[in-house]
Each structure stands twice: as C-alpha cells, then as structure tokens.
Image 1 (cartoon, rainbow, N blue to C red):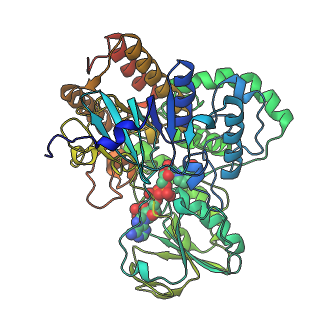
Image 2 (cartoon, rainbow, N blue to C red):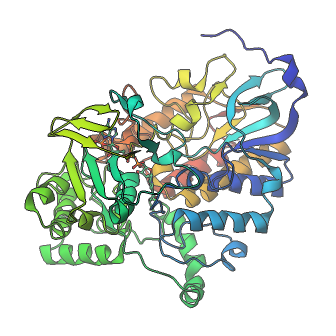
Length: 544
Ligand code: N01
C-alpha cells in the first residue's frame, strides 16, 4: 500500500467546479445537462475532439448501432420531437449528427473541454475534493467526480508475435482514422469476429480485392432487418414514443420489448418455431431478448434458440464446409452468452470469390510478418490489417485512469482481484466518486441511453440530496460492497453467462479476473435495489 498521497501545490490553483464529469457520450452528456439544471457547476472532460463517446472513436466503415429507433436516443420529447432518423439502425455518422443536434438544443459544449484526456485523480482529504489531472498538464478540482467513460474505452490489442513489424496499414477498430481509410482494391485482413469485426467485414467485402477473415470463435450474429425510415413514418411512430420509452424500465435490457412469460420447453415445436420466426422477422435483439424467458437460464431451452439460428445461417452459405465453420453443429458456447451482434450481409459475403475465412482454431496465427499474417495454413499477404479484437471492457476505461483513493491505493490496484462496488456505482476508499455504466451495474447488458438516463437520474438525485443536506463527503462501505458482490454472483449463477469466455466475464483479457462484469438481474431489479438504498437514507454509504 502507498503512503498518503499529497496533492502537488501547483494544482491548488486549478479550475474549481462542483462536479467533474468524464466522457462526452450519452451518459456524460446526460449528467452534464441534468446536473446543470440542478444548479451545479460542471466541467466535462473528453479525450476525443468531438461529442459522441464510442461513436467518436469507432468510425470504421460499417460502424452502426445495434439498437433500433427510437431506443438509441434521449427520451425527452423536447429532443425527439424535431429529430428524424434515416435508418432503423443508424450509422456512426448519423449518430454524430444527432449528438450535434442535441448539443445545439441543450448548449452542452460550452462546459466541455475536448482533446482533454484525464490521466489521474487524487482525493484531497483536507478539502474533500477530487483533483483531476489532465494528460497534457493542468487540473480541475471538484467536490464530486462522475466517471462516464463507457464500457469500451480501452481497446484491446492482443500480444501476437510480430504485430509491430507489419509494414502495411494497421488499425484497431476503435482507433480508426477520423478521415477514413479507403479499402478499395486492397488486400484486407480482419482479426476478430465480434460485433466490430462483423461490421467491418460486411463493408470490406464490398470493395476489397481480397478479404481474409481470421476467426477464432464464430459469432452467433442475428438478422438486423435494417430498413430506411422516412419522416412520415416517424411522425406516426412518435405517437407511441412516450409509452415505448416508459417500457424501458420494465425490460431486462432497457429496451421496449415485451418480456416473454413462456418457457421454450413448455410449448409445442410448432409454437416454438413460430415464436422464433416472428422475432427473427422483427429483427434486432428481439430474438435474444423476447422469445422465451428461459433461453438465458436453461441449457436445453438455449439449445432450441441455437438450432433455430443455425438453420437460418446455414441456409445462406453455399459451401457446406464453410457453413460448418461459421455455424457449427455443436455450439461454440451457449447462444447469447457472448453478445450476438446484428448483421445484414455477413453470412452472404462468404459466398463471394474475394472473401476467405481462416479458422484459427484449426490453423492458429503463428506470427505477423512485415507483409501479412502467417498461420499454420501459410502466408496471407495484406495491405491493411484490421484488429477487431475488442476491449478491456467495463473496468478498463476506469482502471486506465490513475485514480487514487484515501488510502493511496489506485482503483486498478483495488480491483486487481475483481471489481468491488456498491450498486455498481461507487467503491469504498473512493469518496465522492461515482461511475456510470460500470462494473456490477447493468452496463453491457443494458441499452446505453436507457442506462444513461435511469442510472443517471439516480446519480443526479443523489448528488443533489448530498449537496442540499450539506454532506461534503460520501463513501461506500466495504460491507455494502460485499453484499452487492454476493448478490451479483447469486443472480449470475442462475444464468448461463458464466459459461463463456466473453468480455462479459472479463475472460477476453489475459490475466483479468474472471467474473461477471455486468449486473445480471436486469434493469427493473437493479432500479429497485438502487431505490431501496435511497429510501433508507442511502444505505451502504457513509455520509459526512
Ligand atoms: O469485440 P469482441 P468487439 N487472435 O470482444 C477476437 C460493442 N459493439 O469490438 O471470441 C484472434 O466482441 C475474439 O475472438 P474470441 C458490443 O457490445 C457494439 O467486436 O475471443 N482473435 C473476438 O472474435 C460488443 O460486444 C457495436 O475467440 C482474437 C474478437 O476478437 C463489444 O462492443 C459495434 C484474439 C473480439 O470481439 C465488443 O465488440 C461494435 C487473438 N489473439 C462493438 N483476441 C454495435 O452496437 C481477440 N480475438 C453495432
């Protein structure tokens, strides 16, 4: 353990506000807006040059959201009334335009510092303030620190031999060049077949001379059923928006799907097929989220979903051997325990002459050479290498900041053996600090804007009450952390999520503790638990 940190004297003169918010995605912008409405002075610090959070960094070709209109926007009528989307699942550039529209309506940018990466934060015990330091120098002091860094703020680059020697163009999907990259007539390789890999592959296949997809685990991608949206259609849809937004708090993942009360094992095969077929046709995550309640808790029920999915996919791939690699008879893991992702042409592109799949389970990558990828199958020469290899998810965005609590311990050190939180929002030893969309909260299981608002409302109310009650310091207790961890584990053990080596389990990062990083009880139960703490005078916190 480190000795008590001292705050360097030069940063005593730093800018001082009530709240520092980190991150200008949905969550951070909502905090900024609501906290300002309560009369707090707020400074939002953002590493990127623009708004959007994940949609600033992830501008690779094909990047688009997997959530349907209108679930991926703010629920305030003042905002949705005058906004019109062009597609049911909007692309990154349209999402950026939306953020600019919101900015224009709410005048957010005046309190945001862009190109400002937060490097560290130290708690000044004498003044009960956080001193937030910025990478290029300078600091901001605040009574409260609210981290809204999202679940995917720290890209993961695997340690593959020779990677640094590649002489072509190489990018991680989350560090894509802001001015784009033309893949036309190029030899492109994509490592990774998660949601990002699927989206890049679909686009690269249209233009590349040769596209090689390096697959370790097949993704179980669902039909997006994308469509264009016009203004008249959305005018009609908007009549239902209030009811649809209200339903978010009743659904496991914060969507507007109706929850199913049926078991996949209690219906006839015909009824089961009809229900799967209907949700497949509806598209998006409804196949994952609203068919049968036991798909994510019972292996036998789960297998019925997998078998339906496999039949759909196999029918689209001409070469039976290839079909078996993309959609094998035996599931690589239970259906849905790794995030499924949505696709439009993913399975069709493998029928094209310019697209090739390398099955890394059979022929692993031996090394990256200056000119491409060497596998047991041979050398694959490339002009562009895309690393769609994911993120040190959920905790990585927080632990990459040097946040030092009252004992001098960093958050990274504290969580070295696993995340410790109260309600997935606070951690003992780190007073006056809250994080949203973080570990042990619904985060990756929940639609982003839903969490931004519902979890966000709890945070705003909490901070308002602390201020009004004259509380200058709040801190979660270790007992509350233990209770919360036990609860997350008990509920998690009732699900199938622990059965996969997914980012949900922290298992995609070598050496990272294996634990369920998202709250598995669903949004309604989570909100109840948070409300219960508030109703008991913020049980689990020491207020001073
Ligand atoms: O990352 P991932 P992602 N050698 O971790 C492979 C959100 N998102 O960026 O499965 C070879 O899912 C790895 O293989 P395996 C969404 O929540 C949303 O795609 O570990 N391969 C896997 O195939 C999503 O779930 C949207 O065997 C290696 C891939 O890399 C989350 O972000 C769009 C490897 C990583 O997949 C993360 O998605 C994009 C190695 N050494 C992302 N290491 C939308 O809403 C890793 N892999 C649309």
